[in-house]
Length: 211
Image 1 (cartoon, rainbow, N blue to C red):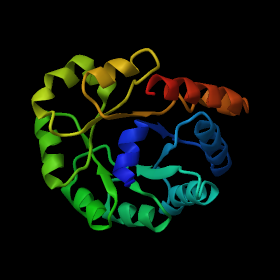
Image 2 (tube, rainbow, N blue to C red; image 1 turned 180 degrees about the horizontal axis):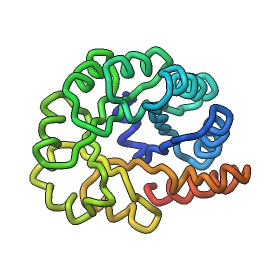
Image 3 (spheres, one colour; image 1 turned 45 degrees about the vertical axis):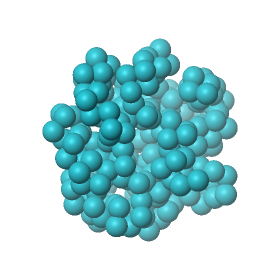
């Protein structure tokens, strides 16, 4: 099964933002045990590349052979694409439509999931080679917006922003093929309390919704 097929099958990408290496690994393990095997580690643009690379490498090393796919998020430059690939990332997620980043991602054999807001941006991403286009921020745009862009239904869309247990099925009904979820799964209050069983339970609840 290809990386793209595994993303389309898994449907939920858990976004682990703003955690140190230890909590990144512990949170990813809890999420994996809950049934979600797609993990996004966003680049922190305020820190050196090595800061994010260490966490992506940590995920790839820790879960090697366990079916977990690590991706890099908030990717803004070609250099970040190469850095993510170097440490084992399988897919690249961006907040913007950058043809250079998309093309380099595909040249390196990785899945490209760039971000877009308008129909023009969505179509531009797809023309540049995107496998999936991330509609962002989907909570501000709303489910009705996703339904309104259905003339672009030939383009696989992902929703990121504001996806919750209560509305996730509505996003899928609106036509998205997968979703990205951050704090609603990787709840920082639970992480700070060391309640990784709570994280596992949250992940399990989300995973059950897409089965």
